[in-house]
Image 1: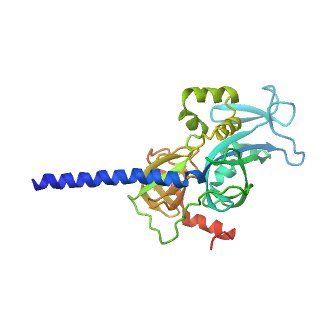
Image 2: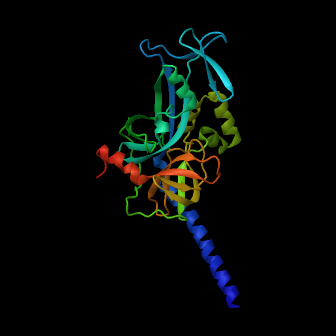
Image 3: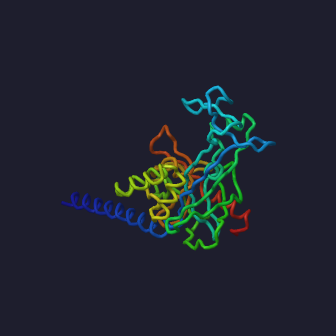
Length: 303
């Protein structure tokens, strides 16, 4: 019957759309995946004036108390306790030769971080100890230096500390590229950081890496990079809302995916992922790339 033919035609169309979206995700991932890096930032705190490093107190009596969630720690600038250090994982992607874009809260991980703000409030100064990018096809870390930031949009433009990074640069959307509710999007990034990368490995390989590195994040990352096992995760979704200064979408992600590029189906970057709305499992936020272009203009790398 005609009605049945119509249903069949619609199903075929839907199937080809779904297939189209799948091959599109694969195409974008193959082309631009190598330009999407895992970013690892390690920071600590120093006492201004003396330059003394903030450490965990060796006894529960010494030092000052800080709370982190349910836990309480004693910290001090005296003694030989381990230094108070934090390593954070995020995502970044190339936007011009020698430059990478990420979130400000990835490049300066103490920014808007509750525990860090508590310590800063006590008069200590955060100090970035390491900021490295790991690209899928490069077996060694690429040091980064923050060139420009936008606190308003949680963005950081970073300069690469190496000149041998020759990877495809994804096209960035301009004002003419429309972002409509319902349109398909593809997100590349490193949600859940190194745990997710380890989970994707053969169990014996994962166990070997965990044993040799004792799960110290910087060592795990280095080992994964040496073995060529750093690859961004690809998730798909749709734009669920357009708000001033943000794109709401439902491509799955979590911590670690911050700073990842959000592509449209033509392989053009339309946004930079920056937050997960915990209340709504399917709502993630991205800064429109048109707002990030301003940073690139200020740096003189985009007309």
